[in-house]
Length: 169
Image (cartoon, rainbow, N blue to C red; front, side, top):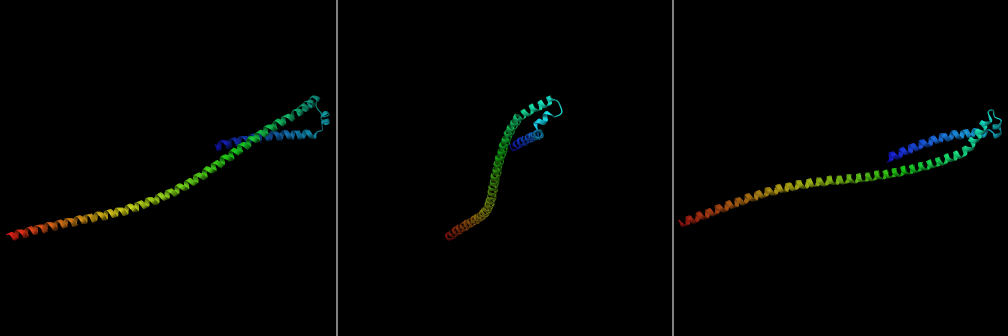
């Protein structure tokens, strides 16, 4: 959109420059004519027809200049609207860029927090894994101890049974 507005602005400026050049030539011509008194035109070398034609042309120049000036005012108003639209679009774009920068900063902060949370979770998982290994080892020791107690109890029963058998015998 900005590119289209810039292009419209460029074309409008070119058109205004072309019109300025035309009006400058017209103004220079009128300036030259205004320096010559009307009486001098009557006695100028050339035919009366040329003088009459110049007078008619000069009479038509005023409305032409007014029409050109009105067109130029319209073009300048349109250029002002284009400039205002371009300025508004730039402001909108700047706001979007600022908003995106704020969002990027917020996302970066969240990413850092997520990385920290992941690191904490890894540390906690490693600690829990060590605890599980320790508890597994303790459970194996308890099983071994229970096995040893059962074995000792079995041996004690066998001794008791052997002692009763020996006492009966």
